[in-house]
Length: 274
Ligand code: ADP
Ligand code: MG
Image (cartoon, rainbow, N blue to C red; front, side):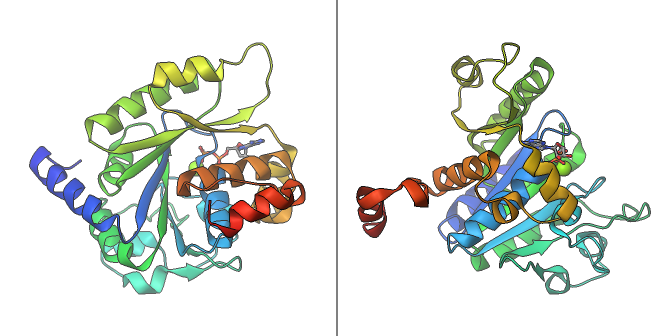
């Protein structure tokens, strides 16, 4: 965690650099809510939309972005760079879907001698090269999440629509705001629309930030993880994939139209970049 003065300086610098690229942390209070699934799929979507995109595994203890993306067998990882054993350029891999990935190491020894705080300087070096850098965070507010949060300008909070996840998400939002990070919004994931789920409108009021997406519970996510291919590619017409595309459009501030339903009006709007 950075001390007040240094954090303010870094925030100022991140804001200046934002004109070159946006760096967004996908985080959560509770674990297992869908951060890695959303990071991999948003990276694939933003890349397909024509943005230079990089996905970084900033979950140092349980890095499984590589497993979601099929880049888990690489020998050089972010851990090596954080340890000072490898050059940054050697751990940036190109995914077959066009975006770049920096995976973490799955080895149990990988955490030895790594310096979390190096992440900020890594991001500063990379921001000018990308339109979007997405960081897949660990859950909770431990040291590694805090280091990752220190390194970004913007935060997306992922939660499931149940009380334990939502309570922890609330804490994460408050922490991010205290750190002067821009909380873009909350993504509700694994939404089943049953009577036990918390209401979207009430949640948005409670969080004080918009709910920018509501991704349904969808079996195609399990299939996509099994195949190690983002759902937006392998099952692009699944309900989850459609919602993830909508979220990506909200992040970039563009309207989203389903290609097959967009009609003349939608195509005209697209033509004028709306
Ligand atoms: P986190 O990174 O927050 O720990 P993951 O992205 O690894 O969470 O997701 C945890 C599990 O939840 C994964 O096994 C994935 O298959 C499942 N999952 C995530 N989102 C959905 C969804 N919308 N529908 C069905 N299963 C999902
Ligand atoms: Mg994860």
